[in-house]
View 1 (tube, rainbow, N blue to C red):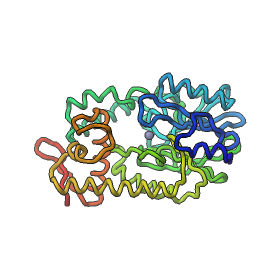
View 2 (cartoon, rainbow, N blue to C red; view 1 turned 90 degrees about the horizontal axis):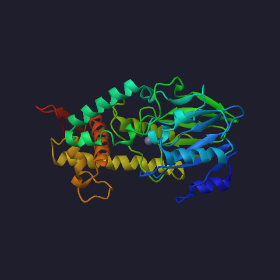
View 3 (cartoon, rainbow, N blue to C red; view 1 turned 120 degrees about the horizontal axis):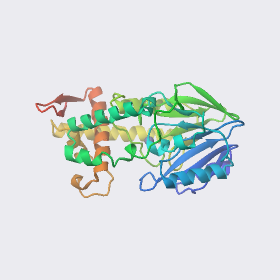
View 4 (cartoon, rainbow, N blue to C red; view 1 turned 180 degrees about the horizontal axis):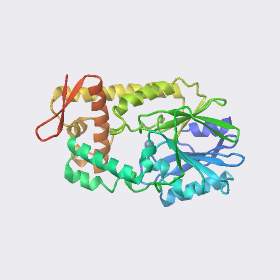
Length: 343
Ligand SMILES: [Zn+2]
């Protein structure tokens, strides 16, 4: 491990420069304009015949330029490239179809693989919209969020033969490195981490971030996403990682971060339960409006609509988890809206 480069990646205000963390393994910083995540860590592993790019940035000019500059700095601008997407979010996937070389693979976890079909994806967004309406999200607000959510506008071409699903336990070899796929459902249904056993390096992607709490929302195709996320966190904690490589910003020690994330969600679930205990019969949108958020807005009414959408998704994930635990009951009222009461 290159101690100096690793130390730079541990710096909270770390440098926006390409770092060679291990021989032939680079971190490429990709800015995310107008996004609170600020920047993405793409990683490049140079192989003898083919190189592997892990995540890409949005499909937009600033990301494209940074990625090309990063590949050049790593000496890889002419390498035949395969791409591995740690999950389906467009800040990770956006440029995949542009940078993959003809015949190259775009790997993605099995649980997110269905999203690489346009027809499936469109049907999925229809299901999400229906579900949000049922959970109390106002129709006029939903109409405005549709189309402004970057999830829907900055992604790669879909329906390509390059997409290949990865299963838990699959192994990829690139240069001197062997990457073992760990399915870590939660942040998305098909979120994966990658384990390099010989080097004790763990790519945590967005499953574990160090100064941001990974967003956990409701997924129609992943029941109880929060419960699954907590299981995946516990599992990832069993890997003796000397270096964790996150999908965004800086790194730090893994074990205490996992404990902090588990504690965070326990607190959040307790807060959600307390709201439902105080006021039975709320819908998820109303529960979200009563939770605490660190967003600069005076009141729920002043929240940007996209933030309301994400907040409602997070509230739903916690309500689903509490229902699974038997602490909360979800029932449809006469209008078909879902209402939550404490047991
Ligand atoms: Zn993500």
